[in-house]
Amino acid sequence: MMSPRLSTLAKLKAAIETAGVRIADDYPPGGYTLTVSEQGISEAAGSSGRNLVGTNDSGTSSES
Image (cartoon, rainbow, N blue to C red; front, side, top):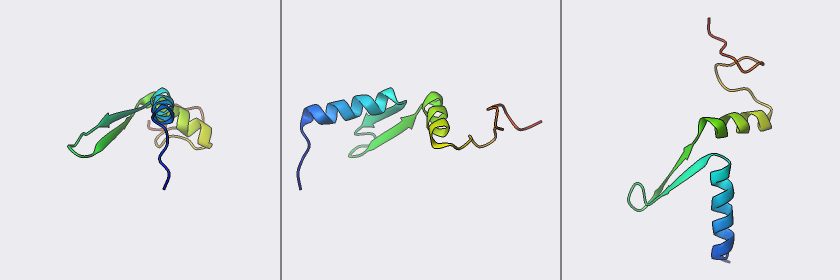
């Protein structure tokens, strides 16, 4: 198996963080945690052609 260069990994991590995903290395110990911002979720939902749960086509809450 080939290992990517460290510079490539740094670029991938930067792109992921720019997309609204924060990576916490070694949390929990020996692992990692991904946290997605609200903006990141909104952009992902828009680019996938799906609506967020609980919103209508205009992006506002569907609850009355």
